[in-house]
Length: 545
Image (cartoon, rainbow, N blue to C red; front, side):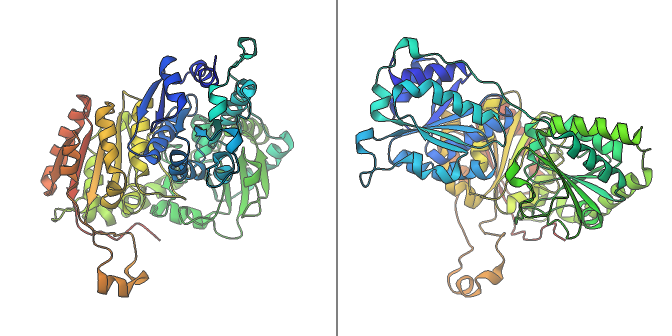
């Protein structure tokens, strides 16, 4: 068999059912022959975002795979891979490369070297005989330790070279997980039991480790409130009486009070990296930290009690140690739970005029609130866009189950949400998959709505169209704003989506929000890609403290 046939057969053995691409590269035909469905995108970025969303929702059990053309295709994919890297998402990238004899000759693009800074591992299939070993290493890295993109470049001459049958000896590797040092667990348990006002800070690692049951048990044992990072949102049910909500750029009043008042912060499956997309950890707090990434320990905060290992395994160790040291769980702290509920009630009451506003143009908070109270939350996966859409959604959307909310930040490329929702739908076709985006984001990636229509991927896109960039503070560019009106945008997006074959509506009246959403949901159930455009006001107030 030739090189690409070997790769395609390995992908099939790994359970890959479809592969994203923008043609052409030799692997496309080999994958189709192997029974792997190629999905062709308008642009590489959206395709990579889609395999990203797929890997997130399958929790890495089925890996999203994207192949790029030699040269410009590999160049165009850079932004999408950078986004997946910043979000620690396990995806496999298989760019075509120049023949080995052309390596290093200007201006040929060399993905292996160029992608080194935004992948967990970047390697070239330098000889056809190494393909099985290199693919095994790739899938091992995708399933072990902190997740991230892995790239294997396929040089043109390796793609067509012959691999002897006797050298095709591939077996899918299993994940390798680790527990923490028992001595570290013992010290951490003692610190947690001694703390007077502990707060649990849960990150995306809880989702990847499927550690939500253990996290709930730890919180209830300690009677400790739980906040999540933006990527970790949905890792702890926000209906739980100990839930504080999401600590993204915009947050809840519960997070604000209890994080500032904590004497100990217990980070679970997070990095504790200082970023504009997370609430800052106050100085002087005792830090307990469990992560599977040794590089994250002590990165920007002094870590008093580190535990290195898989979140689920370490939390199970910690529960056993807490029981050993304390004997029994703490009694239910009704005062704490009542206080959390009271703060939430007052915070929501403050925002209710916006969440239920009858003004026109529509307030975008009303769109989010009505959407949340119309769809079946137990059967919905939702993701936000960069910018204002993230701020409207993050604090107020009630995430009940793991991976029902795909949160993200850090790189924040516009248009990411469309591909994420499409990937989520491929991973969970029984779910309603929604992305909420602004008009600028739709203008960036909107043509890939046609991909959803053509490939029958029935997602629901909510476009918040205020024809304005609300997220940017006017003080940043007063002269440019006054002289050149740089924050104003334009576009008729429902018409664009309709021309590409989607079911569309344009909504201008608050009373039509819920009926339009219900019609949109029904249309997705009928197999249609849906775009609902809401004409909204400029809303620049966010839940910040």
